[in-house]
Amino acid sequence: MPEADVKELKSFYTEIPQKTEGFFLKGCGSLDWGMKNRMARIFNPLSGRTVMLAFDHGYFQGPTTGLERIDITILPLIPYADTLMLTRGILRSIIPASANKAIVLRASGGPSILKEMSEEEIAVDIDDCIRLNVCAMAVQVFIGGEFEKQSVMNMTKLVDLGTRYGIPTLAVTAVGKDMARDARYFRLATRMCAELGAHYIKSYYVEEGFETVTACCPVPIVVAGGKKIPELDALKMAYNAVQQGASGVDMGRNIFQSDSPTAMIQAVRAVVHDNETPDKAYDLYNTLKNRNEKSR
Ligand code: R5P
Image (cartoon, rainbow, N blue to C red; front, side, top):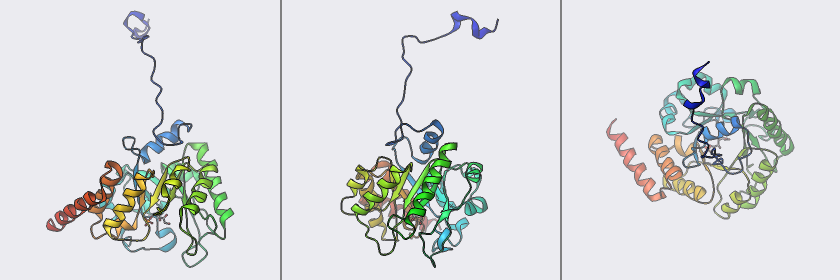
C-alpha cells in the first residue's frame, strides 16, 4: 500500500476552511485562471498598478525620436518596467527572451501617419501571440474616427480570439487630431470598449473630471503619457491619474525622450507604486540623473 494512503499520517486541517481569494483587479474577478494570471503579470498584485513602458510607436511612424536604436536606448530601461508594450518585430529582433517581463503586443496596424490612421486591421495572428507568450494584445479603437466601426470590430474579434486561449485584450482609445480630449469623450470611449469586452483600457488623462472616467469604466484604466512634456509635469500627470483611479501608466515618450530615461522611469515607478508625490519623485529623478551623469 502506498505511504500516501496511510490515513494516520495525513493532515486534513478539517477545522480550517479553504481560503477562497478574490482577485485584486477591478472587474476582473470572473476571468478564467489564465487571464487572471496574465493580468497579474501586467499589474503588480501588491500595488494593483502597472508601469507599462510603451515603445510600439514605430508601427505607424517608423523610427520615432528616442527609438532609433531600441537596443541602445530601451534595453537599459527594461529592468524598471513591469510590462513592455511593443510590436512583434521589435520583440523578436531586439528583446532578450530572458528579460522575463510581461509583454503587451501591438496587435493592430496597417496605415502609416501619412494615411487615415483609423483604417487599421488586426495585424497579428492569435497563434503568434501564443507562440510569443504574450500577456495581452493591444488594439487601437478610434471612437468618432472615420473607421470607428472597423476598429471596434477589430477589438471584439481580438477579445473573442483571446478568450479562447486566456489572453486579455487592451483597448487603446485613439484620439484623432481634431477630436476633443475631454472627460465626456473618454467616458464614452472607455465605457464602450469595456462594454464590448476589453479587459483593460488605455485612455489619456484629462485635467477636468478624470475621476468620472475611471469611476464609470468597469475594468482597469491605464493612462498614456502623450507628447513629451517637462519631467515634473509628466510626474504630476501620472500622480493625478493614479490618485483619481487609474491603475497605472502606459508611458513612452515621457520616459524614453527624457534627459535621463532610467531616472525618469524610476521616478514614475515611485509615483505609481508608492504613491510618492510629484515633487518628491522629481527630487528622486534629479538625484538619479546626477548620479548617472557623474558615473559616465
Ligand atoms: C501609440 O500609438 C502607442 O499606442 C503608444 O504606446 C502610446 O501612445 C503610449 O505612448 P506615449 O506615452 O508616448 O503616448
